Image (cartoon, rainbow, N blue to C red; front, side, top):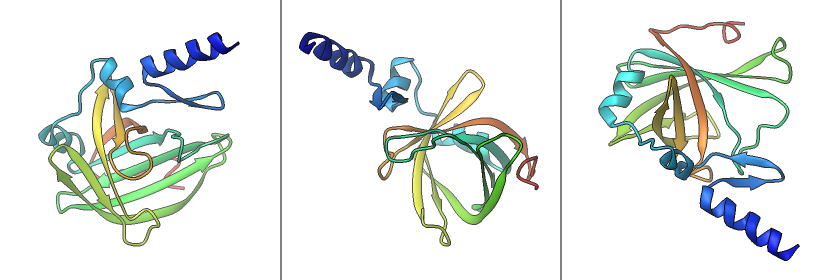
Length: 167
């Protein structure tokens, strides 16, 4: 039994995965092992500027998303303004989209940072990666630092509120 525990712990260390009660969390090390590197500031700007990004939050050890889907959209204006919307659902047809926050974004080298004065989450930064046709956001600040925090499935030109965000 002790040998099995040592082997399992060693495998987890080698893969860079962090687990908690059966849940696996994707880390920046996992992305690097796949050969992924963070996008440059110029590349991030090309992805977000004057666009609406739509994605889904991913659980981390400090930000659990259990038994629900957590979608978000955010528009990135050329003036540094953002329009953020968050929806969650336990079933895909019953969305609660009550959270809407205006904020600011800026690039710090290859990190995108957000400020939302009217939110409990005031200031957060992320690095962006791309894997096939999905953009990945890895937190670089606060408790989720080093973990994959969100996947971006869609980028749209201009400000667009698709379902469920327009409900």
